[in-house]
Image (cartoon, rainbow, N blue to C red):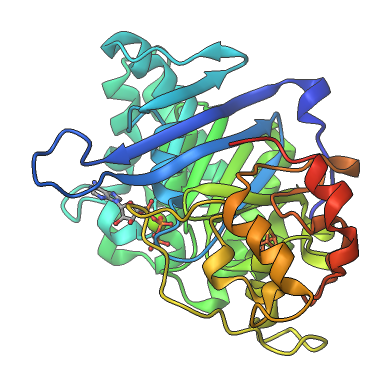
Length: 357
Ligand SMILES: Nc1ncnc2c1ncn2[C@@H]1O[C@H](COP(=O)(O)OP(=O)(O)OP(=O)(O)O)[C@@H](O)[C@H]1O
Ligand code: SF4
Ligand SMILES: [Mg+2]
């Protein structure tokens, strides 16, 4: 379980996205509007902090993760490391990528079937030409990843390992470079339920042992609950709610988070909220609150909700400041209840704190 809260404002973020915009298709002549996959994201990850990034398929999680890794260049905004803007020259990027390592969903795809565990883990050391005894470094990384005694795994091939062991080899390949941050994109979704918990426990123990910062990209709010200090919920290219995990999941302030929670199998106290309308299209971002076409808090738009719906459709907004770092981009956030029901009378003061997009 989570064991700490990191105040990124006072401790300083290890990596940070500031007003980050990343898209595709801006330069094509196809006549298609560009895809605004990441559309003004603010996200900071502190030292030793585990942050989960959740949201439905296509909301921009992987694109944001890739931008934080320096693999996608932003259209606008910045990625910062310890407050310094990321530079995109080849040398600067190589140094950065050593410190910010990626762990992908599918360990089988990440490992070359013809290379031994030793070669797979040593590869990063060779690419980055790191000094030191290679054998010792590989052994240490495998041990840290829970493959012990490490030497027993040196000559094994991926097909001789279980799925969980393969994912540990991938993690060892990241650890061998002594990174400050691991970005894990759906790190357990390809694994059996029985080994998921082991890999999550490993990430938690690495944070404790090494002070690693971790960004975990996931569809799974249950996973976020088990591992993350902080949870950021993304919708259509933007973080729409973020805060300490137990606060976001225990008392969501954005109707989208409430809807995601309501359909979890573990959810016993909420009626499932079915989101209306089509899945959102990042090349056609709605005006005003980008969630308004599907927002369950607006009901059918009749009676008392009509005035608010007008504002939702037209008022651009970003995160509303809130106590204890729990923020939400919703005009009604202040009075949102966990099931997404709202008191329209409270809309005014909360709306006054909205920051224009
Ligand atoms: N290289 C690309 N070229 C064009 N469009 C892209 C590219 N990569 C992503 N997209 C689009 O950007 C949007 C966000 O995609 P992204 O992969 O970041 O979503 P995601 O939240 O990671 O989804 P999932 O949960 O399914 O992995 C999608 O509409 C996707 O089709
Ligand atoms: S601002 Fe309006 S449309 Fe957007 S989430 Fe809040 S209530 Fe729903
Ligand atoms: Mg993805």
